[in-house]
Image (cartoon, rainbow, N blue to C red; front, side, top):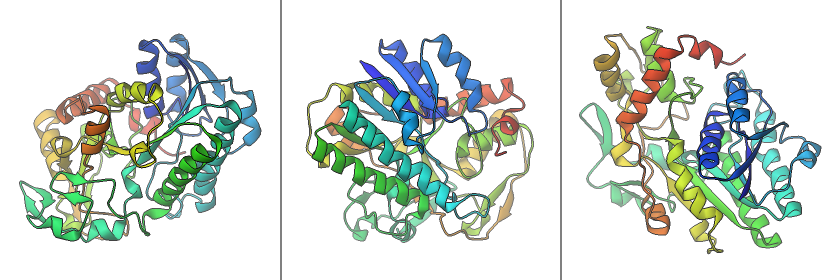
Length: 356
């Protein structure tokens, strides 16, 4: 199978490229290399035989030079929920990257008759609805209250399902991804090429470019190891907020199934992929792991609330299990061990992957 991966030198794109090459696929990839740290993946991927192209999805003509392919896996995005609103980044550029780039990519798929797998995000789900979920604290972590089902369809103790509300606000980042999903499904229907939307939980692993607003597991472990300042932000400054953790290589098997899949209904082309409740933890629990593995370090409490923070977001991957017999293969503890080993071997990693 001939596959083109966008954002191929980012963390997720590079992991998937390595996995799919090992499975015998012919890989090409494009990247604009604006993310600090992405250059470090260029030579290793070239040595694996991945054809690399320096291209920007925002520029339609850049895609003209791309080779024909059977499928495109879109792993290119500005993945920060604070993008466009943090005073350091442009809202227009966020939309140009995440939505304008999708339009150009869909036109490419239309012209080349290629299928598309869009890697989306848990951040398409409504912030207001997520913030209103009934939770309690247990073992230094928020967990769903016993009556969480009263909030309506799409949520249970197993997590947030695909039927959970996606109404605004979802952040500018979430809105660009949700709009990209809708456009992708429409293009696929109108122009007759297959589309799959894979909504992912928090992707994490060795080599991730950790920052406080993205790559939180990698950022926390690297910062802890270097004894850099850390804070528990919001929710009283206790660190009880919870997310699930998923290694991107665990997506490789389902991607192969999707590459060979017959056309499915529109509803079955959108599914959550996550570490689920077994792979979920709070920042406080992550700190406990760091203390046991890396030694003590003080985390400062900061109860200041931020508009996009939510107490508990764990994706329910039951639909992916039903459709694809998919489950995460890498336990959260193994993901953390991998990140810690990489952090020990790369003492300047946070600086090399920090914003310019």
